[in-house]
Image (cartoon, rainbow, N blue to C red; front, side, top):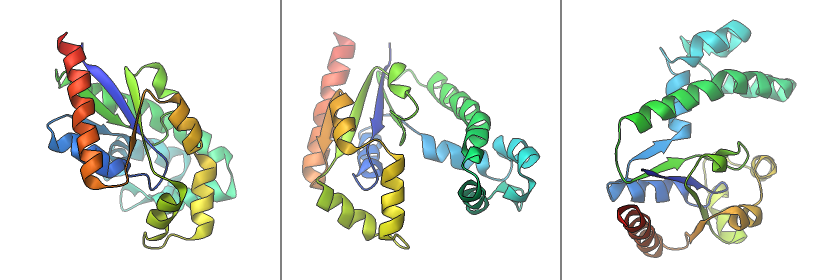
Length: 196
């Protein structure tokens, strides 16, 4: 039985870096954001569906995230309509990924893990975390990021404290070496349990 480890964390907490550390250690990683990018790209399964509801959102045979953001800003109800299309497609993408692996441990990188109740079907959940001032510095260092955008993103996400409380495992991402060591320890623990 494969251990399905959900990986999540608020913006700027080091989730992508941590996911890469699992990949580097040979653990298969499924990335929800990458799946959505694939579905939105030219030839992606979401393109005809979203095009049917929002023809303006299709630019060069692909879904334009910028247009979707504009539509959502004008009408928050649009989010629900997009989710109705995208969630089943993402679930199919994930199922196809899992069907191709028999690894003892698989990481599922899901930014809005608790927000979408993914913890209900995962074996356990890992939250990556860092102190608020570290998070703020990382996020505001990103190109084009503003205080207002950072605040808006935080509003959409369950707080870091709440995520830590609900997690089975927490890794602090203050230094790359300490994070890598914590990832290695967790892999050893979860795969040992698998072989037991």
